[in-house]
Image 1 (cartoon, rainbow, N blue to C red):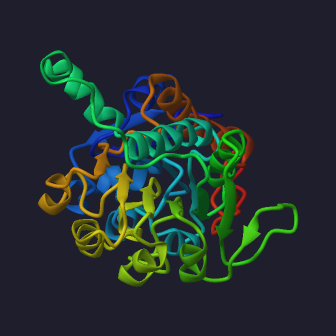
Image 2 (cartoon, one colour):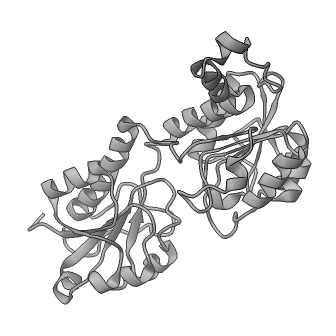
Length: 323
């Protein structure tokens, strides 16, 4: 690799990426993905972007020699991959390395929601066990439940493997059925919600999935129903969810993602039958380091071998410039 390619990093970025980039590249850290911050010299020199979060297409277009956008996270809805593809720019994500961690978190959130374990811990910490007696029996249990997975990608399959060990029935809804799985398949989300009592949402945040978990789906889930959302907050109609929880349309919910992060609707915060986490699905140091390493390794591989390690489906490109 002749010279060191210039990689621009706009806004926040994992410490693990920031630490490794200077070993291989000439990094330029900007306060935000704002085209106004891009000088003419910088525009001409940059051949890669490392991003965590949203990347406006206007910022991408400020760099005429851009070859690769390395996104931190399995979801890349913050990057317009179709726009990048139109310019021949490869987009990468950090698929696989966080699947197991997110699946672990999902099972933990499910059990917390059903058994109210965070509330039980607070009962102990506040001295109420000693003063008032045992914590109330949880009205819900995982025993005998039927779980429907909305989305069955890498993370969804990792969740399903864990659920098998709990002895629950498993169903799924995706655009097409999978021949290699014995789980029950439902062609629509409403049909699946009507057949299960636990719905786990793990689909990407796209326009196609936006607020698809709506009042109709929640009503189909029923008054013993539990919703667990760990994919993207945009997939759940939060107003409809708060209403369903308030009126007993469903029994409980556990959320790790929200539509307008880091802000959580007051209506959800006020409810006792909701378990809320601040988007920590993959938030262990080990997993975040693996994600950071993959961001950098994608960039290194692109400029050294001419191919990215984990390009997204929209940009299956190889480098046209000499390596």
